[in-house]
Length: 194
Image 1 (cartoon, rainbow, N blue to C red):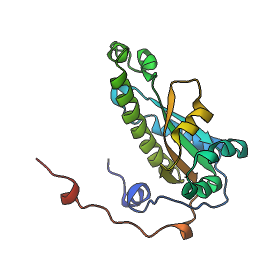
Image 2: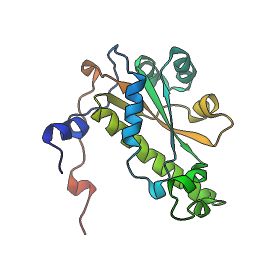
Image 3: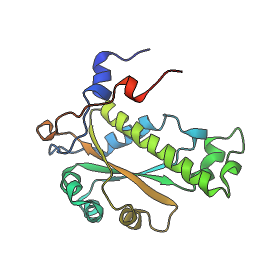
C-alpha cells in the first residue's frame, strides 16, 4: 500500500531541519511512541545497536550544552528534547535474543572492526528511522553534528560500551526560524540504474 501525498509531504517533501522551537513541551509518552515505532525498522541481523538518551530536563540540558559548538548551543538549549543517538559496541551480546535462529553473536566476538562498523552503520540508520517516526507522530526534528563526542560520552556514557553518534533536537518547530530550502541533487546526479 502506498502512502498518500500528504503523508509523503509530512515525512519527506515538506519536512525541514528545524533550528528554532515553539515553547511547547513534548511528553514522555510521545517519546515512547516514537521509539516503539522506529524499533521495527531494519538493522543488519536485527542488531539494533542504537541507544538513545532523550535529554529533556533542565539538569540534563546543563550537562549536554558544554559539549555543543557555539552555533548549536542555543537551538539545543531551546529544543524541548535533544535525542543523543549512540551505538552500543557490545550490541552483539543481545543477538541471542534478537536473532535467535543462528549464533550471530559468534560473527562479532573478537572482531572489533566488524563490531565498530556494524554498530555505527546500524545506529545511524536507527537515528534516521527515529526522525521519520517523530515526523509521522507530529514532531519536527533538527539532526546535527557539531558537538564534542568525547564530552558527551564522558558525561552520559562513562564506563560503558556506548559511544555517541549524532544528536536530534525534537519538538514543534518555529517555521519563522527556518533557513531557505537548500537544493537537492537530481536522480541523474546521484544515482544510476544498471
